[in-house]
Image (cartoon, rainbow, N blue to C red; front, top):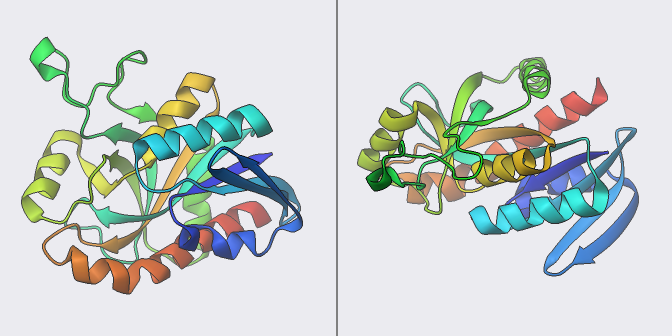
Length: 227
């Protein structure tokens, strides 16, 4: 069983339409749609934006469906100058850029209990995602994806996050999904397609390019599962 989580319907709806033997399971405020996706057992969910929504949805999915791995897919803002709208970023690890207990002597971004700044993503899944992106003839980067409960829309904030974590993309869920998977011993991946530059033009770029970016990430997942 594979688990796929997006924050918004547009990030998973193309895949959901291709599910065979569709079954819906509602747990609290989260609905999980399961079935066969390109011949593989799969479950999909829309978690809603933000870290708590993502973590709770991931935990419900793990508890109810026991997926072998969970992939958080969708769109993100660029975290570095060389990453452009339409590009893909596959996470080597995720960080939570708004976690900060540095007054207590911890490094910025350290996540308590697991005591890590970089929340690891599964290397085998990462390599497969990169291969699937290249098969789709899309530009793909590998590196850190930074998560926080804010929509990044100014260059100074983006630059600060990049300086602290060397982040290639900024978004609102991947670090929470990776954190939850780590706590449960479940393999995790984070895939993002860039919808905006996370700068002063994000309010215009994001609505314009979200659908295109979401289509790119879903194409990669289709290539991944068809192997």
